[in-house]
Image (cartoon, rainbow, N blue to C red; front, side, top):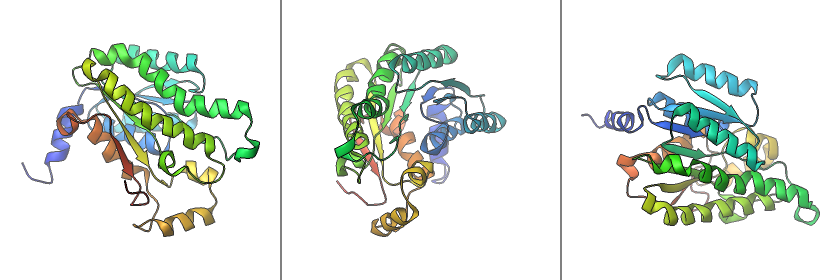
Length: 265
């Protein structure tokens, strides 16, 4: 096997017909990760807060080229009951679950700490932190039955840096995700479930287009050692690596930073 061919061959072997739920996959990083799993032969379920044109277009695009047609579930992950229902529906449609990509979440605007309303704090924490635990709990029985079970959570560079002004709640929620990843990895290792996380830096998706000005993004890019913002596709390899039993079967409780050198452990 040639050096250029082996990664796709190995990953196809790892992921073909595997049952994968990618939450928050209507756009951005989640959409790119979902497309990669589908291209590698996985049976995937897409998830979005609602059935938006972006989610429908992604499902149609994947269905046109992938081995399996994707299923779609919806639900607001700021609501624990909606989170449980979405995961339950995904497992029912797949007939089990091998891999959970916990990617749902967003900043929900910039909220200066001095004026951060309690209701807003609760909603941001529920969406970005609590939902990760709720989804994992709901998926646990199905994952425990899989021989290659893996959870990959999405945290953020702001979990360690504290983020920029107005992101206290989001940054704190992502710090919880990083720590919860290690806690779940420790607790569920005996059940054969690996739990890791990917920590994206500043990725040029609509997330930052909504919450950051062009001037702020340009200044951020200038400070990054690689002198550019990340792309959603830059993150995909880390998710595939951590989900792969062949490449990462002895890796659990880890957080991989994907940030162009903006933050080095």
